[in-house]
Image (cartoon, rainbow, N blue to C red; front, side, top):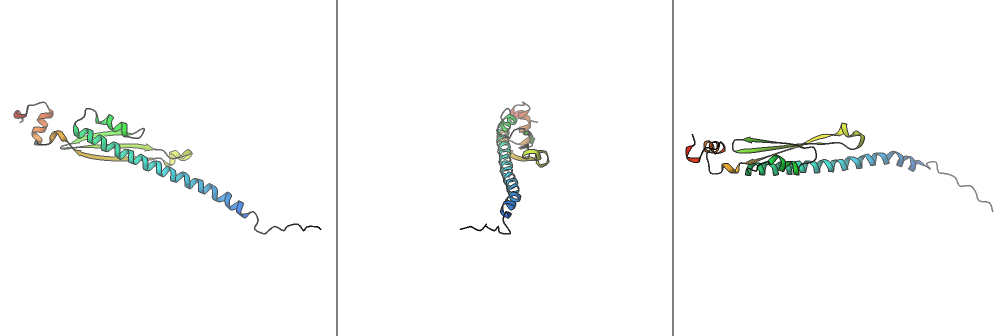
Length: 141
C-alpha cells in the first residue's frame, strides 16, 4: 500500500509569518509599558522627596536639600524657596527612555510641595523677620 503524499493547505506557513510580524510589536509594547511603570515610580519618588523636603524646611531643619536628595531619584535637582510664611520645595529629575531610544524618549519629572513655616506659628511677620535676624522678641521694629 502506497500512501499518497499529503497536500499542503494553500495558507500553510502564514501563522509563522504573522507571528514574525506581531512578535516585535508585542515586545515593543511590553518595553513601553515597563518604561511607563518606571516613569510613574520616578514621579512618585519626586513627589515624596518634595514633600519630605518641604516638611524639613518648614520645621527649620539645617539642610532640607540633603533630606530631599535622599528621597529623590538619582540625578535629581532640589530647590528650596522661602516665600513669606511658606516654603516651597521643587524636585526635578531626568528619566531616560529605554534602550537606544533613551535620548529621544527621555523626559523630565518634576514635583513641588509647599508647607507653612512652623517657626512663624504664633508670631506676626515683622516679629518673625526680626527673630530670624537675631533681634530679641521685645525689640522688633
